[in-house]
Amino acid sequence: AVVREAEPDVANAVLVWLSNRCNTDASGEAEALVARGLVHWRWNKFDCALQDFQCAHELRIPGASDSLLALQICLGCWPEAHQLATQLQKHLAISLIDGWTSERAIQFEGGSAE
Image (cartoon, rainbow, N blue to C red; front, side):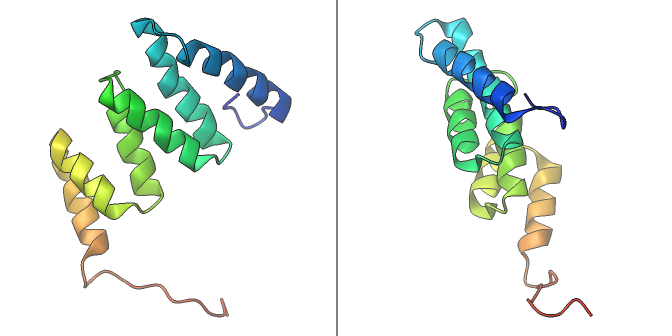
C-alpha cells in the first residue's frame, strides 16, 4: 500500500484492515497505528497520519516518535517539530529546525520561475 505502484484499491483495503486492528484494545494492536500512519502519509492524508503518529507516540509505540517528527518537519510544523525534537533530545533536528526558522533563513517568495 505504500509502494509507488500501489493501486488505490489496495491502499483502501489495507487502511480498512489496519483500522480494524487499531480499534481493538490489545496493546500489540496499537502498533498498527504507525503502519496506518505511514499509509496515510503515502496517500497524502497528512492530518490522519499526524493523528495516528501522535496517538502512537503517546502510547510509546516504537518508531512513532521519529515518524511524527519526520512528518512534522516535512509539513513545516516548526513549533511542534521543535518541541518534539527537544523532548526526544534530537540535537541535529533541533539545530536544523532552528536554522530553517531563523531570520537569516532564505525566504521564498512567489513569482515567475523565469
